[in-house]
Amino acid sequence: MKKLLGLLVIIILAISFSGCLQSSKPLTKETILQAIDNVDTYTYEKKMVMKYPSLTREVYIYSGIKRKEKQFFELLEIKATYTDGGLYKTRMLQYFDGSKNYVRMETNQNGKLQNGTWVFTLSDLYKTYEQYYPGLTKEEILNKFIESRDELLNVKDILSDANITGIKKQGSSYEIHFVLSKQYISTPSIMASYPNSTAVQDYINVMRKLVKENIAGVLLVDKNGRPLLLTMKSNAKITYLYSNETISATGEYTIRFTYEYKLPEWAKELKGAKG
Image (tube, rainbow, N blue to C red):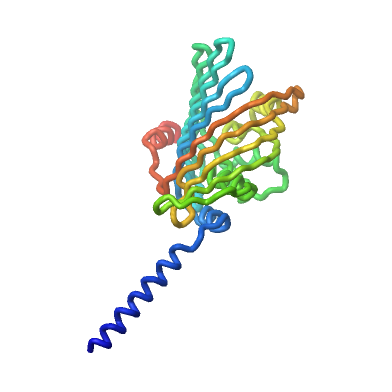
């Protein structure tokens, strides 16, 4: 009997040790990228401070995504403080329920207040995107619209191209340290919220820019590789394609992720007011 009990203890210890070895499997970039792909529902809070020669821009975003159901809500606040004393604030609320996009925008330009509320249908969305992406199916257009709000895809793009300089275990989480240099064309995504607007198209043309950026950051992920917190600092050279003007800029970014989706009261009210 003692021999049998001893054998059982050895087996249990062996199984437990094997489990420990499996759980301590090193985290890799591929593990994190796969974990991002497997996410369906999440919410994120993003804070950015960008400094240019003539202004400082502060951006705050609180957004939730349901990838499979193709729904999202988004609160966007932008504050631009100019060196000449000018001040511009924008606050935008959006709720896309899968069939309609409910939008409210409030602006304050040096004390001059403006606001408006709109509802855009899927037909509006298709017509807008067809101007810029001819040949896409309606399903592909809808996917692109949702992806434009999917912050985890941005994290995936950054990590895919980044050079990992270190991975540190912090309790049950991991810190991924990385650096990245990239070059890209940046175009305002506001056109997705304001279809068929000549004024918006003019704004897009003026604001299109070539960005050459160097980034250093730390990504905190859970034991399964899902992002929890991303912090980054960047230095960039920005060339506006319309005017061919080049400026320098710096940025600091903080993004927190939680894996839940709770529709804010303002989103319900926005839909109720214009539904």
